[in-house]
Image (cartoon, rainbow, N blue to C red):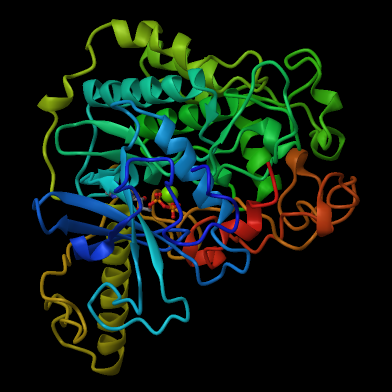
Amino acid sequence: MAAAGALAAPGQLNLTESPYWGSRSVDCFEKLEQIGEGTYGQVYMAREIKTGEIVALKKIRMDNEREGFPITAIREIKILKKLHHENVIKLKEIVTSQGPEKDDLGKPDDNKYKGGIYMVFEYMDHDLTGLADRPGIRFTVPQIKCYMRQLLTGLHYCHINQVLHRDIKGSNLLIDNEGNLKLADFGLARSFSNEHQSNLTNRVITLWYRPPELLLGSTKYGPAVDMWSVGCIFAELLHGKPIFPGKDEPEQLNKIFELCGAPDEVNWPGVSKIPWYNNFKPTRPMKRRLREVFRHFDRHALELLERMLALDPAQRISAKDALDAEYFWTDPPPCDPKSLPKYESSHEFQTKKKRQQQRQHEENAKRQKLQHPQPHSRLPPIQQSGARPQMRTGPNQSMHGSQPPVTGPGHYGRPRGPPVGPGRAPPYPSGGMPGGAPRGGGSGYGVGAPNYPQGGPYGGSGAGRGSNMMGGNRNQQYGWQQ
Ligand code: ADP
Ligand code: MG
């Protein structure tokens, strides 16, 4: 990666690596199916023609890049190349295409950018969001322990290698049919130093999994940010749905405070010095209710969750200590990954697509019914003409039977990820406010909050890190930042 400056051209990557790194063509692979809509571009399942090996190809989107090779992709490649662990996705190779490219279905791609760059990963059958979203799925306690232990082991490895992931969430946790879980998507990751804490951007981590210190504007932070996200995932696995599904940053903070209590100098020494604390401190007392709300959880699970969801990052449990928690050492023990059931592949992209098709199908059926009222209302719904024959038409329930709302985020069913990135309006302008303050203006909310260059990041537009919502230009969003 020595040559990979911001302007490295295709083919110039990996100069310091073994000769074939970055020199092979994507034509060595046959694309089989699109499995993800990445922020950079698409992710495909593909077969290496020579060996028959199945891999995942993640295309680095270049069409929005005026600045040359995206800095975020450089970071992701650089970090992934130094991480080698069974719970971290393996980047096998970089391949290029000389364009004009064929798109996923073999049609010529009229994209102006003629060359393409792909990361080649080991293929994983599922991501956790896609898996949990399968109809009828319900994880057992040993299974949850098994996934959690792997998640913590992978994250501990990152943290001791001084890497913050900064986007831990279900769709970035990949699972294979051997029951192995691996951390993926290091597009927002970065190296950190324990000695001197430099300023980092607080505009990272998908909203629902973002810790209070970032929401309050902290720019000096460490591995504890990832541990908050782990706590959110853990609670989600036990609870069956996301625990903090905020629609914007003020609502996110409010949801956190409602469950975890409001921060003050007693439970979080130093909190009042965090940039936006005064803007967001609740106007009414809010007690910590975690134990009460989740009283039905197993005692050890609750104990661990309490320590993961500590408001004060300094008191939050580390990955290493979490692995030593009683929870993992009491009955029932975590199961052996190999004993986990094998499922047909499921990625968030696919389950989402199926759900959209299902919804479309239902709407069409409803419309048909309105236009031609049928005497027998229980006749099977009319097959939509455009629907693929293999489409699953059964109810696409989440694992605990809750249906994601049609609009807005739902259990694993949201448009690809709630907000993470900056928008144009002033900070937190439109949402609900912690402490039940009135919306908009007043109480210091939304007015003159510090640290947002160019008017502040949170536009309330729901701009997510996901490509669907942000047009995929993560480089412009984060490239200049830490
Ligand atoms: P983005 O930065 O856009 O979120 P990701 O690396 O998370 O990109 O990839 C998007 C999706 O593609 C993932 O959520 C996952 O479903 C799928 N995916 C990514 N890498 C792999 C892989 N190695 N094997 C199988 N699926 C993958
Ligand atoms: Mg991702």
